[in-house]
Image 1: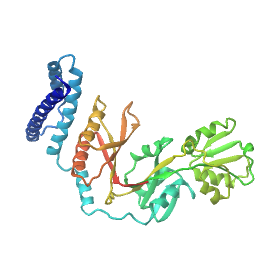
Image 2: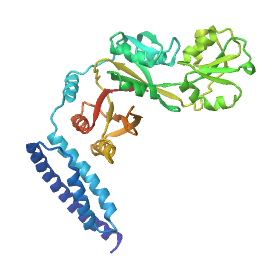
Image 3: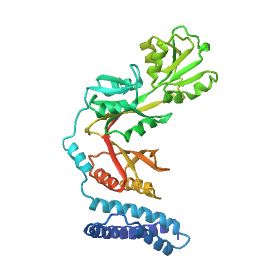
Image 4: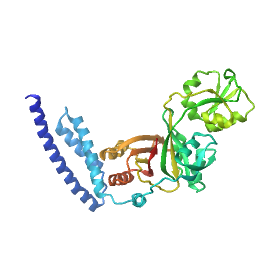
Length: 380
């Protein structure tokens, strides 16, 4: 047989496979109804394992692993379809649906906003990008920002969550589980670091450089060129700049923004010392209550799954089956539970889609712990 004849044969086989797949899904619908009558869960692992063993044996040794892969996908699709038929509204889905009945149309122009650090910080720059007229309140650490929003002291809070060079801000991720909040907006802010010192300082005299650990990490190549200089972690880049300005030392410098040089009357010893000139930090804007604005197209979730083989794979499979993009997956250890992790998912999806609501209900019921962190849009 020539190539065209073989392709025609494959097309004929594909038609048969699709017909049988559709028939299988219709039977799965009947199974979903039977499970609902008996109050049984969608997932039946013993049944799936039995089917796998049978079809792998039927396929023979040459094709058994390919058959296993095929049927794992088939199970994911079947479970997703059954979940859409079976799962009723949950308190979370009801709250989301209530919020999007009359979606908020315009993000506030002015608000009282909490951020970590002091005047001149990158978080303050992020506030100015998110709000036209922010009334910014500064706090010493990230936890106090969460607390200010949670208690209603501030309407919103702005927090860094990841950097394109240094990775995730793990402290913020670890604090998320301890506070009740929703993400209502996010922002990618271009970051350019400079080395700042008091006016008239000679670069060769610098003995100590201070800054936030993320900034130090983002400037690691520059710092490697100064092996004899002491590196000290500060709580914030702007705080470090302010400390240098108020210090009576002439041998100390801070890694901070060029704006802080103007703000605190400092001299720029070196410009653009970050490892990567395409250096961005992603900030999230949080609120106490759920706020979903028209045009929101990103979803963040926090969840944990049972500590069993395949649990995370099955959760990701639910997303893949419905064709949504998982754009970030972060894991953090759960304190007190050896080698167990809490996962943070970012999806390119919107709760204005009924398929997304079904997916969220399915994931919520399958997870050991599940938190919807928000549906929002991102400024770039």
